[in-house]
Structures are given as C-alpha cells and as structure tokens.
Length: 240
Image (cartoon, rainbow, N blue to C red):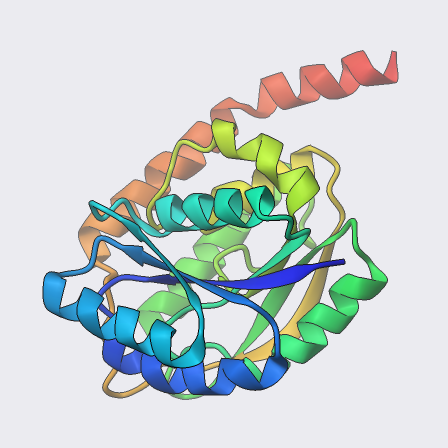
C-alpha cells in the first residue's frame, strides 16, 4: 500500500495553511490540486505547498471538486500511488482522523473508506436537511437504506478500482462526492463508514450556492435514478 493525500483547493489559501501544517505530521505525500483559483490565491497555495514539500498541480479553469479530484486521482495513479485520501482544504474535517482512516484502509485495501460525519452546533440547518434528502435518494439509488452520508468528502479511495469509474462521472462539481460513491457501490466496491467530527468554521468561505447547487444535485439524483434499470440489468446478466 502506497497512500497519498489529495486536497482539492479553490480560493482557500488562508484556510488551507493551518490544515497543511497538521497534514505534515503524517509523513504521507500530499497532492494539492488548485482548481483554477485566482492568481493571488494560487500564489499563496503554491507557497504553502513549497513550504511543506507538497506536490502542486493546477487546473487552468475552475471545473469543480470532481474535476480537481479526477486530476488528482490520475496524477496519483500514474505516479505509483495505490490509495488516495481525500480531505477538504477549508478545515471542516478533523485532520486528526487521517491516521485512523489510513490504518483502516491498510487493513481493508480493496474497500472504500468514508467518513460518517458527527456535526456540532456550527452546522447550518439547511445543510443538514439537504443531507437527509440526499440520503433518502441514495438509499433508493442503491436499494440500501444503510448507505453512509455520501456528501462527506473525507474518504480513502482504492485507486485500482476507482480509476476505471472516472470516465463515467458526469457531475464534476458539488455532485461528484455523491455520484462516485453510488457508482462505486453499484460496481461492488465495499464501503466502510467511519465516524468523524465535522465543523463549519465561523470565518469559513463556502462555495455552496443554495439554489444553483441544490438544482444541480437534484439533476444528479434524477440521472442516477434513470440508471437504475441499467444497473439492475447488469446485475441480472452477471448472475446468469
């Protein structure tokens, strides 16, 4: 097992700096994917990477979290890494759990490890409601009401299994985290859920736009539901 940490980053230079400091203690390579940040932000992100000897790659245009992660996955796989731990740059995830996630992944190298978020009072009620709605739809899309929170972006991917799925990804912005998990499940990749604390910093910069992104996620769920017959047909074909 040769893990790497991938951090998608879009105009989060200031929030990422303290996260980067914490990541250095794990002695695990880090790839930072700058997803088309402004020139000023990119300079800062690149400076943080240089300070900690992180690998810095950049998308010329902002393509969304999915586009950043796909770039990171491909770079990692091409450079011999076997597993990729995804963590946000904005400080929402509990960096202390990185070691726990990697340990579990080392024991279950073929499985996808995903965080099961434990929220505190900082979590906006609108976000919590949105996540409950998504869990409802994901349960339908997978025929599994025990599916974890697919919107949690703290996870470890087994790259050998995930790379082939990347060409099927249609939603590369806010819907990416949901789509990749549903498709991983449909492709028989076992998923392990791990409790982890999630916070919303008071001074945090959010790129979530309520109307636009909720519409986008609604379209994603429509798309995934439309694929259910195809998924079931493949399951029946493989059984026979």
